[in-house]
Length: 167
Image (cartoon, rainbow, N blue to C red; front, top):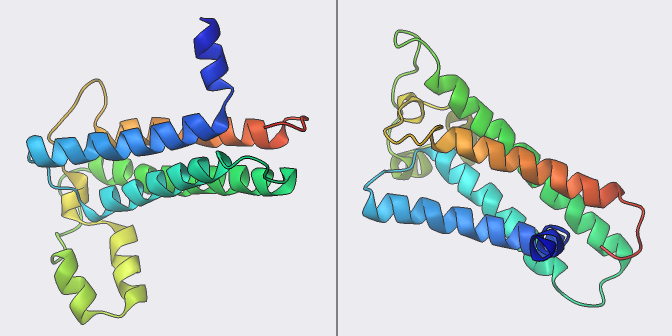
């Protein structure tokens, strides 16, 4: 139990480990489970990747306290944005079938034909692909991602506001 407590008190390890672990897990499901990610899923992976990057930067020894706090703030904000994206996907998944938006064209087509801001708007609004889910273990992918994002948000802001000179 003492080892688990020490691990949970290391924000670099938790951020980097969870971020990389969840991306690798999603990739394994994509490759071996043949689950194609929707655009919102890809944005959630980017959020986890940015959280992992903040954790990796926190590992650097000798960082000033201000930089460490800034990295924790950024990781918390990335977690919050990921939670918003996952929440949007959960909302789309729980819509009645007659209210689900139509499926958008593939991402490659959108990137080739639309300006970048319209692509971002189309992705964030979601489409019919984002409303589908095939896998479920208590919760589906988006719900699990939402839980991890909320955990990482609370975790990072706890250490951000913790009155300590060593993070």
